Image 1 (cartoon, rainbow over the protein chains, first blue to last red):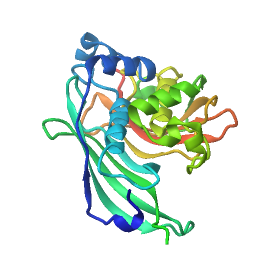
Image 2 (image 1 turned 180 degrees about the vertical axis):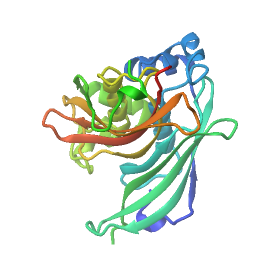
Image 3 (image 1 turned 90 degrees about the vertical axis):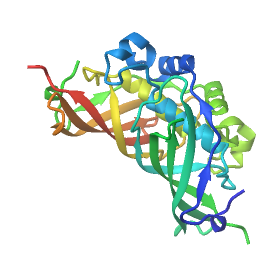
Image 4 (image 1 turned 45 degrees about the vertical axis):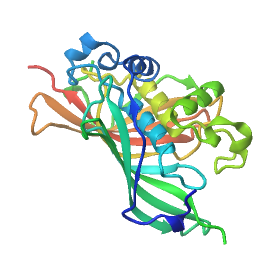
Length: 147
Length: 147
């Protein structure tokens, strides 16, 4: 359980791995991002993705799962106050195995809430070839150690 | 079907509405964001959210569904090149009815790809009380009209 006082700039937290299932790519897209390149192999061949690719929001959701189960455990949970950046440099393909590396870029006490701190983290989601499939820079709220 | 030439700065596109289901908040969180404040009413009461709240990634995914089915229909689909900003100003509660308003902030031809354009859109997700529950500023790839 991490408090602001346990977190330092430059710290890196690693996650486990999760494989991306072809059927789940399609069912996630059916519910949330029903566009041909996320739903159907043949249609995807003719798209900008040149093959079936997971919705970026599916990648973002998988990343969150990996983060929640990673070494990075703020005492009150992972609570995003917002993002400065979110991008998907490479498509996620069926069978890809993803993991997340999070690096602390900034950590400081909140000015308005003396019991809270704010940290800035760059979370990079990598596939089995160590290609970045998602990068975000997020601002998170973390508690200060009571005392 | 929209091409770059059909899109002008200041244009606003509106979506339909979608109600957020309490059970889906919990099952989405079980799969992708298993933290107490997204899973259990009692635990959520004691959290920063003061009650059950949807994962921000669930809100983002619902927003994408609303966008895909909205008036905003680029000819090749909605393809995000990245985001300059993403934040969740208010929690999403069970039963909330969400809709999206997208405003075009910038639209210009790509320098590197003469058949493509780049547009910048601010998509605001609003609840039934017109409170913004999510705001993102996204950069999208759109095709130019063949010609």
